[in-house]
Amino acid sequence: MTETPMTALGKKMMEAELDQLIKVDRENVKEAISEARALGDLKENAEYSAAKEKQSHVEGRIQELQSKLSRARVVEVTNFKGEKIVFGATVKITDANGKEITYQIVGEDEAMSDPSKISYSSPLGKALIGKEAGDEVIVKAPKGDVTYEVQAVQYR
Image (cartoon, rainbow, N blue to C red; front, top):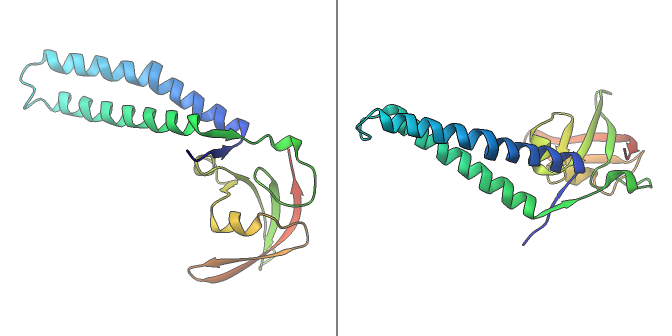
């Protein structure tokens, strides 16, 4: 079983979503199915079909979150010291035009929820891991190579 690295905040957000799905969404879907059944013929009942589809979606997401949480390895970012970029680091970089961008390197699910976070497995995330302030980073992109310079590395 492969571990899934994530920050403590990322795990907390995932647990909150799971809690919402189990305690609220699942119960709402059960009620919707019950109400739709009361309307009669299930073969031509659009409400019943929609409720069953919603149930499938909710149950699938619950299983996905439970699986990810069971494999979670929380990386405590504040314990890190040093210059090298590792998982959890907040990195300030500049692009070729001098534009400053700040990202935190996090797990895949965390990165999807916040544009100021990038996944450690993304092309830029992979290129940044192991670098330090002052290093140049070249990322292979569909349009061609993109160059960044690491300005600062923080662990907070």
